[in-house]
Image 1 (cartoon, rainbow, N blue to C red):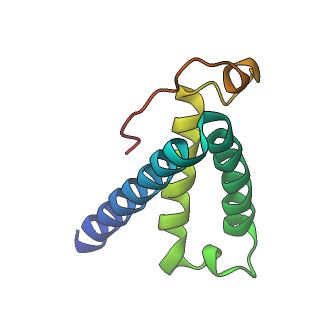
Image 2 (image 1 turned 30 degrees about the vertical axis):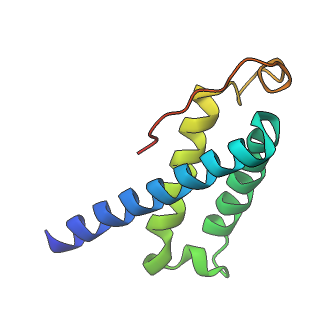
Length: 100
């Protein structure tokens, strides 16, 4: 039970941190730049988790990386990051949301 609580806390803190990073990037660099950063970072984190030689594959760190990947995927889905590049190029505001 304690490990489940710790894991849930790890997911929440990772999600909060990534959501804050995305919001900061949107304010500083704009929506299109944030979209690109989220896509690139998701790919990097995913490769790291799948690579047995990378520390992100280790059980101590894996949950945080997976939580971050989930935040990125949800954010991309909510902000036109999958399937349509027009959403990134348009002037329409992206959705701010709590991802976790």
